[in-house]
Length: 368
Ligand code: SF4
Ligand code: SF4
Image 1 (tube, helix red, strand yellow):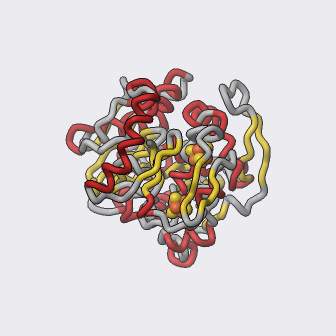
Image 2 (image 1 turned 90 degrees about the horizontal axis):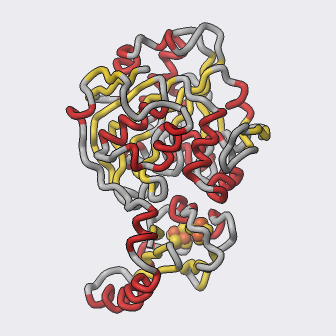
Image 3 (image 1 turned 135 degrees about the horizontal axis):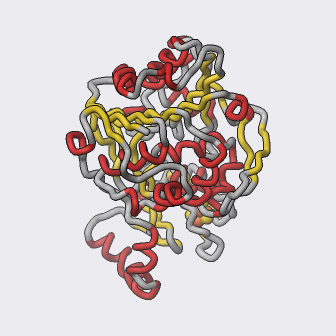
């Protein structure tokens, strides 16, 4: 198995990365139904680093079509966002007119319940029918951080094959193992990672800082691609739970595979990574957190910072919040309510899944 890493001036260079792997003919045969799955999680452009560049997606589609594939693109954004609002704002509104490939709203597609034999936390899941009916899934994520899973790459990108709020079940049962469970049955035949503009910081996957990296990574094994991208981002893949778990469950290797092109060291750039969840939990005791919370607000006022509130494991930066209520709809356990124009979280009900922070369009919510 092989991974190609290239410095890239623009999205069309995805072709060069795929050619290094032996060309698209290795992955797509004439007449096959191909589903290309980008990351269009939120109403942000690819310049933000949150979503895959539409031109890069189009290039992958063209290559698959040149091999005789019947190509469609499909995505379900973060719950509770609507595709009808997200796709145009992410630069995908005229994708079919511009490039000739249909863009399917997986939230509107027929839902099919599948079994996940050997699933550790998720044994049944709902998946959009076009995902099950395709012969080849080409996974096209963007290189970015994630406040709960540290990074969001190829393994994590598959959560978007689960429509609407059905994807919350993975958060409820355990995101790291749930992502791996899903990847055991929905397999990526080819992974092409958009690292042209990535995202770093604790507010990924939607509200972090853009990183102009100018890199494209492609490979035939999702674990190996993710391990390579983690190293490019300055992380050890063995310390990223979902990548390590995927390797332990036999989905791919963390090392010992071939890397072609420019290689990791030539393009490596330390991303600011979110703290790993277990560090928060084990290094600071609950008592210390309470003391810190007592002094945080007067300290914020003294330093002229936006007032912050901590509800269990979630932090709200009040001045960023515009009272849109999206966090109320995003929460799978109804722990969020509004108190005036600000959300209030019932810390006893909160399961620290961070769906609210993922969905907040203004980056007002984060890990405490
Ligand atoms: S915290 Fe974010 S999602 Fe919730 S009301 Fe404020 S801006 Fe909206
Ligand atoms: S309030 Fe807690 S349970 Fe609800 S979405 Fe946020 S982190 Fe998850």
